[in-house]
Image (tube, rainbow, N blue to C red; front, side, top):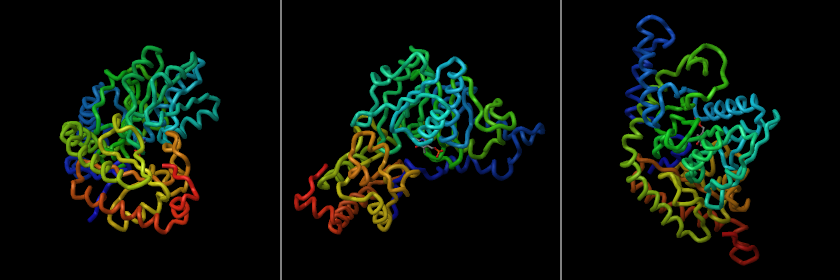
Amino acid sequence: MFVYADNAATTSVSKAALDAMLPYLTENYGNPSSLYSFGQKATEALTEARETIAACINADPKEIYFTSGGSEADNQAIVSAARLGARKGKKHLISTQFEHHAVLHTLAKLEKEGFEVTLLDPHSDGVIRVEDVENAIREDTALVTIMFANNEIGTVQPIAEIGALCREKKIPFHTDAVQAAGHMPIDVKAMNIDMLSMSGHKFHAPKGVGVLFARRGMVLTNIIEGGAQERGKRAGTENVAGIVAMAAALKESCDNMEANTAKIIPMRDKLFRELSKIPHSKINGSLEHHVPGTVNMCFEGIEGESLLLMLDDQGICASSGSACTSGSLDPSHVLLSIGLPHEVAHGSLRLSIGEYNDMEQIDHICAVVPKVVEYLRSISPVWDELEKGELKHLI
Ligand SMILES: *Cc1c(COP(=O)(O)O)cnc(C)c1O
């Protein structure tokens, strides 16, 4: 059996998205910047996609900028707020320890340029507290950037409360909503969000296309220079087919959100229930504030990498931490940020499921994981010492 359980890393392209994009790869291949009517078909498609996407998050179409993905949107949002702040002498940026590297590395670059960065710690439940944000705010704070939902542990942050606080203090607020868009309701007006990042391939559109929402009045800094596309804020011929697919996929995800959630939650709950029966295991992140499909657990004495390879043998695609960091042997910065010891943070398993999974696949995972964990422990010298009491169990 093949089970794709890594939807937080990327998703398959939905039929609706593929059908919508195909004509823009075949007969309607014109350049939207052309003046002839053939190119105008592409322009019209972009206009329509902008309207569709804006409607999904309660934004104005003029506030939607197409990018190459979530990483670019994060980079542009943060750099823009930093430049805007610096012009007013404000050079302090607030974020969290457990952001995606697209955010963390952009902040690190700005720090080298002389900005001061405060990275808040989430509590052990994987949730940032509004009071902590409030206490970090200074006279010279130029930006608060806090992710909507964490990509490794799936915890959802109090975005509306943080948005209200930032609006009251007149500080721009950006959220990396890559894991939330298409999976949870987002209302940029009600939540007082000034900038927001999305990525098509996390909700069944192709890879390499994303959105930066920037509220009217937010002055964007260009990351890519060149032509005057995207109202002069993002140069480069638009990925028309990808953008059309992204709009179709987002609309489909938002229209079916309740039904999808109702399908995913019982599968996710079964995973939590069954895998928690494994001795010395731990669920990471609050289950109360959670995206529907992400399950993150640690199994003591297990190397995440070995676990993933053995699951792969059984047809299960899963992940340990984020796709960008697996491949390295460093423990997850997200799991360390919620207070897990290094030894435990090495042994994490992320299963991220979606509406295309079914209960039979979940049963396969629930049958395979305990056996694999037991096998890996049986050949581990560390586990032997733990069992004999020569080492203390951490979980
Ligand atoms: C996947 C992801 C990104 C990066 O998006 P790309 O489109 O792959 O560049 C950024 N932030 C989060 C939270 C993600 O999960």
